[in-house]
Length: 562
Image (cartoon, rainbow, N blue to C red; front, side, top):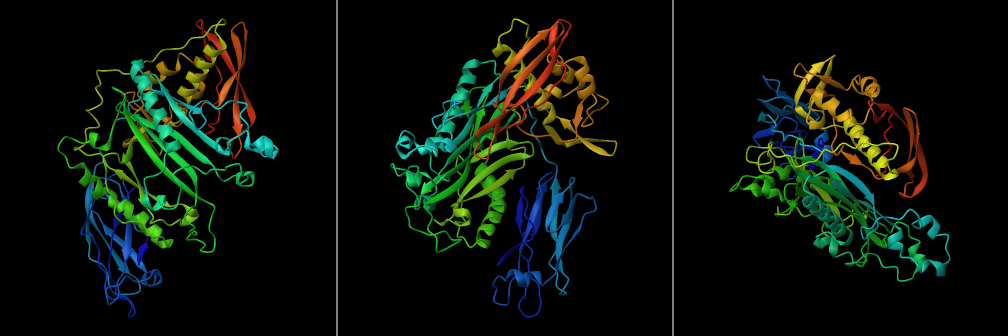
């Protein structure tokens, strides 16, 4: 039986070793003989022990050995703790396992740590806006009937509504900021189609399909059945960032389907649920030069066997998820095929790849029939992320400055606030490169890769059109999260993806101008656990007239609602 010593979200290596304890454990082995990783990608170690017949021992027998992890590295390139190898810097070393309660130890395994190759994050103006929408992708009206109000209706009144529409919750993303509006429209069409596909689609999983109908739960006028509020469908599309003119989007789905198999959940063999829940993900990546979809194979040099590379790297991640499923008493298909349309998105530390693994038609934990495997592929010289879609001499983005006057419309003033909100939000969560760091005041700071804030001059030119000199001086330049090196480059104490987002939950309230000062009111939705609007938040902003231009002198970020 495989014993998982530690779990890493980034990477997994499978080790097997043998030891001698009492008469149950007779051998141990450590495999593979060599470990290769890159900085920023941890390695998680799994342990297996065997008895005299070559059978895997139990967890209890393995624990009785008193496993102790040991390592040696002259270059201080990694550390090992509780079975997790954390690479620190390029270098070599060895790792092995000893047993406190026996005199047996594993052979040493060689370790090689190489430098991570990072993709530069290019974000010159592509902006995202969340849209709260219905199942068909149309905007959700403010007066849309809530589930709470639906349950207040009589049986006859309920026949006027489809419970699937009322219980549905979802949002998609609209992008803006490209100079080529035809490409921008094409990108938004692809995102819309991506959303609709996941609203109407069923995961391609044969074991899963054995258990469900091909359609959503049908109520057929049975209002007693419609009282089951857990019959819902959720589809949310999120931007994960723009890397070298590649826009990546990730969708999460929560769905419930009719259980037509009559099978019980593996958690409770006496219970046969009405519906089967499933949670899974999907991704889409788009070339902002052309508006065409990018597949994973497009990111590797021509002639390179990228599927073999992905299979090799991903097996460590997938094996961990398989082990977890086995621990929960579920069966799972050990094999997986790397297809041209494998799900992925770009991340500063590597390419994030998703696998929806088959569970053999079992409902398992929470009734879910799909186990998700996640692998992160380190960037290598065999990839063309840096050159294929990005040319530093070609600027795809527009950066218009919005200016308001006392004669501006409510829509123009609200657009002005949204632009300032996006800049301020990006400042709070800007992207950084963790491979380029400096130290100051006993803190580590990492190079900012968002070009709007790459240097001190960029910083100022980004904020000046929308924020007053006082606000920039007191609240931006003095922020302890940021430092500048001797060359004026910006470094931050951390970062986050997808910061260039307006969440779509706010609306214009009112504005009043008085000589050189103006007061703007913005209303933001407050949602309950069912994502229904239950109240609103009123936020007041002060603007001042500076050199004939209205700018924010106070600013507060509204809470994201998705």
